[in-house]
Image (cartoon, rainbow, N blue to C red; front, side, top):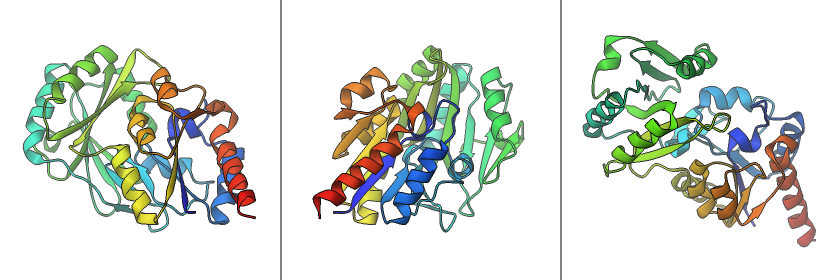
Length: 283
């Protein structure tokens, strides 16, 4: 059996400190070196995925940007990027601005580095987001530049916004009417009054990327771990859908089973237990 294990990162694989625990890194590394197929599916870009997984050995491509691309950690290159329909972008930008949100616009480059434009004042949360990422490799921020006001900007892969959840939800509801778009909007796991919205080309989702990856590696069984609303689609296509104990109520309801919280290396421990059980069954 070729069993593919896929975990969300924030709130699931990562602990309350937003890091991979030493125990999780050691377990996943050991399993991967023995041939287990383990990877992550995250809203993050490779710019933050790589540092977070620096002590964690995996061989399977990571699903990044909520499924808008996969990232080959070995070759350091993107796989299957899905870019926006340029004709849809003027309406997207107009919607954000009408609700008083200045989004981050992510421009794809085959060389592995994303250019991220932001124009206008930043809220405190946006400033924190920027400051935490401004010095990373694989991502280059350009602030208050006329090029960032062009619409559409070629090779846009993601339009990302954050703010009061009620405002974010209103943007999501409005943009959901456009069939050229795929919308992912959810509450921040640390501050439920704060919302995040990701706007992609239609068809982009963690679920679609999970299916594509499973086919790519020839998997015949998929286990998925998640905690938040943007994980629901991939939980739905898994053979074994797993929620961590700290997951949102909707995720706990949708999952086929629940394990311990993200603060106890629960995902890695469950992977190890599952692999060991399968090996025992085949003796």
